[in-house]
Image 1 (cartoon, rainbow, N blue to C red):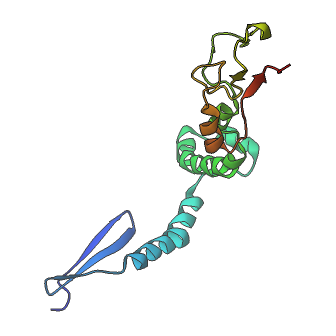
Image 2: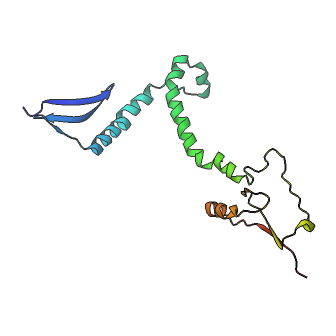
Length: 168
């Protein structure tokens, strides 16, 4: 007795050989071979049969005369078409993350419609003052060097505004 049993796994009329028992040992069928056979069966047999059974009207006005059950049969197919359409145009759509990255000020005084800091030049007692232009400084408006990390992560080249007293 060379073949004791054949283990079949599947649904409907689609069957997939997963293992063959021979003399009490499992002989594995190549997984790639199984996948390719399954894919070929789906593309050559099942997909055309499914498409032939769909109630697709001959004209645009024919969609209005479809019954609820016909619409329900069309729903999975239309869902797949919508998904494929979305995947095709997704690279061209603006990403929300990209939109957030386009904001310069991510957290400083967000409650104000416009952030304005006024500093009188006469009040500068130091020889130089360094002010933030990257909006990442924790000591805003004074620069704390946060632009260095920002430049590394984004490839930007922003630097601080440096005010120096002119020596007379």
